[in-house]
Image 1 (tube, rainbow, N blue to C red):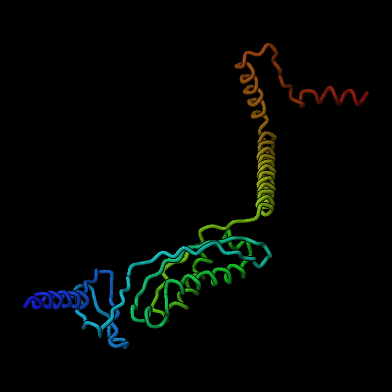
Image 2 (cartoon, rainbow, N blue to C red; image 1 turned 180 degrees about the vertical axis):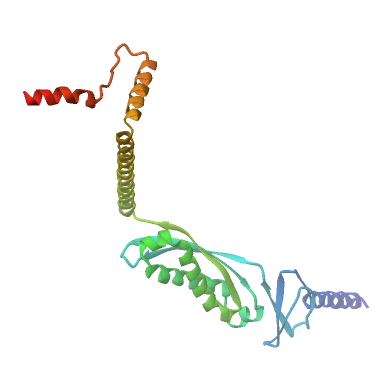
Length: 253
């Protein structure tokens, strides 16, 4: 008679364990891939999911966007420059059954695929393209990785190259190149300014030659500017035309 309560307790505990394994609750962003005796049945969730104990097995899959950090990769560009490049990949599962059945571990598979694709694509580009056409390279990486992960039920939404580490000698060479480029631009701008100034002076000389009175007004304005500075010495400009008769008479003698 004493063994009856013990058996009842064991039965109740066993029933509770079976019931706990039969009832699952999935969040809004989760889906459950159900296998019955090893065969794929369907995808369930979100909410309450009831399974057949021992017979059914369920694997949870998150549908949220995942961020995969690609570790730094050693890359030799097309112009034979050794660099280290890392990137970040944004992707999400859109077909849970494929992400479980078609690939063993979709996280590891996507990470390895991203690393190899990063080395391959950047190895086919020049260093100048990597630094100046970052957006174009990101789009190319996204298209290639997305095409390979599509059979796994994964959608790659974005790929970003985060950082490009250059050797010290390459950084010094690029700094010298940038300095030379800035110096070249400054000289071009200065030469362009001199050219424009010479054109303006030629136009002004043409106007003054056509209007002699304008030259006299210019002389008077110059004298006024000198006088406002409180100088002890005043320079009075003399027109060359006033001296021409004296110079011509001297030549005749």
